[in-house]
Image (cartoon, rainbow, N blue to C red; front, side, top):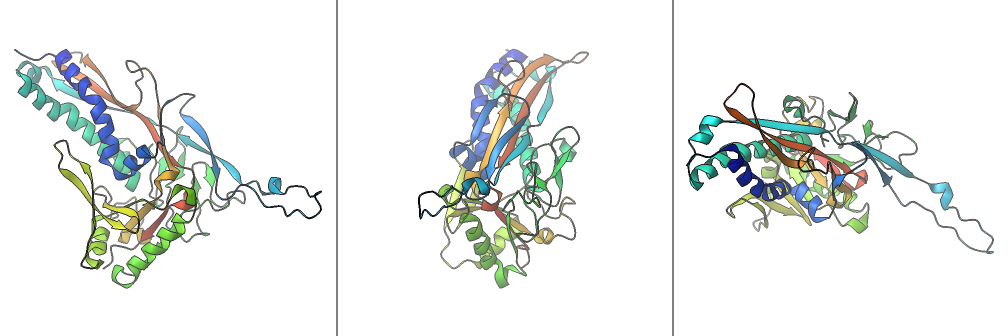
Length: 362
């Protein structure tokens, strides 16, 4: 018998919890953040949140000689308040009534799910990941999500913008505002990312990668070392070709049927993955930046967090790629579904992360 919109919606709703987890599994950084327990769901209180940032030790040592000394910790207050904004984005798509009327049986329903809601969700995932690594989300209206690309900016609500998180400049020479904290402010001690550039990968690529890896890993040591790295395909292949005969693989992110859809290599204790969405030839990477010649992001996932906005599944949704609908499209033989996302990523220890540029130069 033909399928109606409610039947398709029922089948889709059954798959949503699995699809929601697939978003985190789809991307190595997001999976690491999830495994660290750094995802705050259904956070209330408005789209802006503040969070504490301490870029170094928050106190100081007082040497006791007479017993009357006054503690000096209050004179070394370097705590800051970061601020971040969760954009609200709705991906809408339409399923023609004709497709529903011609779908009979479980096989036909499964095909419709694959062609419409599943494909829509995967595309939405790709939009967000592309914005995260490239900062090119304006073409798809997802430019409110944070970006790692320091060559561009992203929207932070009410027409305001901020710099991408990773500045492609030497430590101590970085400018811009990241998560509402000015890198050049006297109170923002060490609120900068680690950075190095290589002249060519064959010359000093691996050594510069090791330098940034250790510079970042030594910050906030309690959170462990840098544990996930993302590079463009040329940079990844340069590293692969530069390895010794013995190669260690790190296989992650299985597809729906258990097939590995991402494969990475180990670098020190970090998992180094190709990021298919990372494209340093895009206009969001400026022509004067060395990052246009390839880059490798190095992240300590313990310093990264995600939060969502929303609570009611049937109304505003929970904001974590939640499906809403179906609604009959007026004047059309079609039904409309919506995927709602109200989420943001932020980092509370910038100096524990870094980037190496120029890695695509052989």
